Length: 169
Image 1 (cartoon, one colour):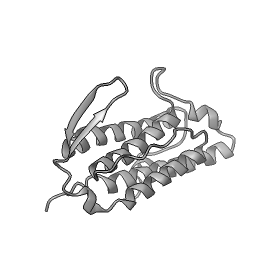
Image 2: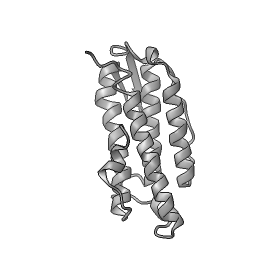
Image 3: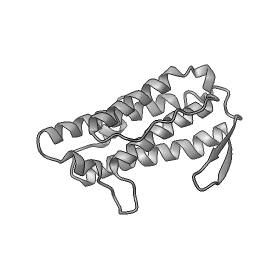
Image 4: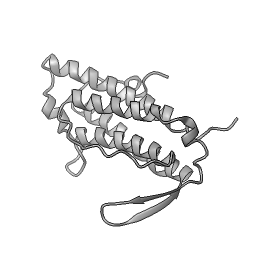
């Protein structure tokens, strides 16, 4: 049995986005109980040259929605990165899940050889075929930033387990 491009993308991204949302809900409970300051957590980072927690979540969202949109031959939606609370970040994750699940599998399947060109802020462009884009760019970036969210929260003392990160399957 072969694994389709849709099967290798959307369900995996949705599972992790749901896990991150559940983690943020757990964190909100800790904030509400006075164990952590919300602003402190949202600005927390692992190293001075890394993005803070809030930006990490925005990037996770961007990687999933942009990756799947490009595989489906769509222009990725541009969302303003203005979330300032855990609740707003959870809303962004929910919006991302809604976007991903609205794209039919048939729009993604068969995109292995789709030409995808990324333009970066520095003016550099990189050309990919769909499968390489998904497997060598989108997926590693998505999981790097998702893992960094988990690591920041663990580093700050939030009681999370590997099961929190993996979520329901």
